Figure (tube, rainbow, N blue to C red):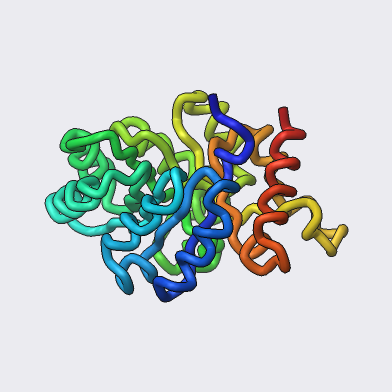
Length: 239
């Protein structure tokens, strides 16, 4: 049965082995998954996955954001799945053909998460990239369009912001896994005037998020283990 701590994804956004494994040692019993991104994976290679597993039973979220022609992404995903991560991320931008080719050639139990819209993109950037006004002016509509593409292609889930997860779940159903980055615990909020733009762990889980990615609030805390415990308590309140 999934417990509140299992919702927490902690990103190992550090450049070297010692820093990464320091956080793993500290948080090995406090989070559900450790996210290994491009920086750490390129720096350390697959050995970092084995090292994490030697210390913790938490899952591995391999956040590679694969994006290339279908044949290349398919082969890259198969290579990544050899290491048996729980999740591997793939961009939606190549379209349904690429996503479908990965989904239909999945050799194991690794789940495919499709990246919808990066949080660094805004209306002006989307217009500069050539997106139609209906999507550039309404990022939620673009997220939903890409999430639908991912589901139809056979992906297990999507990565989307906490502001869109409720819409995605309501429209596409509860079985599509939703991972939400950029979550801020309630106890970190200082600008009360901007709360409408903030998504807390409890908010995200209430809206349907299956996993919440929380980095800096835990990593930069004086006691990261205690910070993770406080996040767990917030998630518990959502039930």
